[in-house]
Image 1 (spheres, one colour):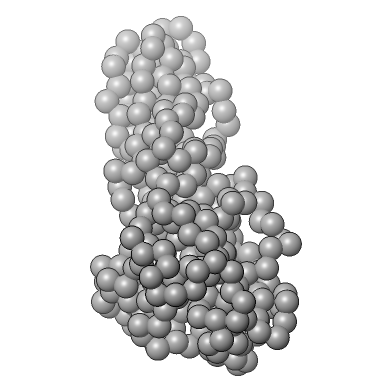
Image 2: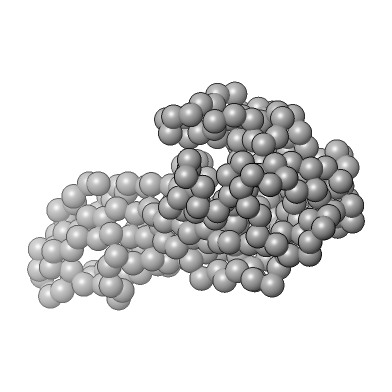
Length: 291
């Protein structure tokens, strides 16, 4: 964070500290541009991501006022530039200064999950895999991953979309994995925005194993990637989580129900194996969703 000491007559050259989420690594995808017009400084945010972003500003003001209260959180639509707030001197001729830090995560803090939606199992129709860690799993399903599901799965297994949406982020350049949290940055993943604004996160995928690209629309049952063992991982498996963004620093996971070969809408539990229904929707074959 850079503290700027600026007078009312000066022209500010503002630097920011951007802290993106673990699923948003492109530092040029989002930019903040302060613009002076007389005594008023307008803060614009340009979002070039394929989903909304939720950004939180923390601001320190001396002899200045704003049209919002800080910390301030704002949602910016994809591929749009929007004014977030303005600053102005608290009194004419006052010597003023400001400093700020901003953080953002993909997704919208105003999204509301459609709890009536039933998710498909994210693997091929008729196949059966064991859940090794379900909701509140002791190894790693806590905090923002509280309501995640892990399936034991051999590397290279086809992964299918559990729900349709827009692919908003992919990463598949890593071949590293391990049981230390230090490996988390090596996680390969696909992130899909659902029509209710929530995000589906498919993790630990195989290097160069993506079958989709950013901006692509996929349907439930489309093949999207190959499973792997990258990132913070205790062994080959698929991690899936639906989450909503809370603010620029935090996200919260959402408990969801799944359709299986035997049940129409159930909560999965650790230690049990579940067979995917034969009547998965959309196309369920290796070429589905390929770019």
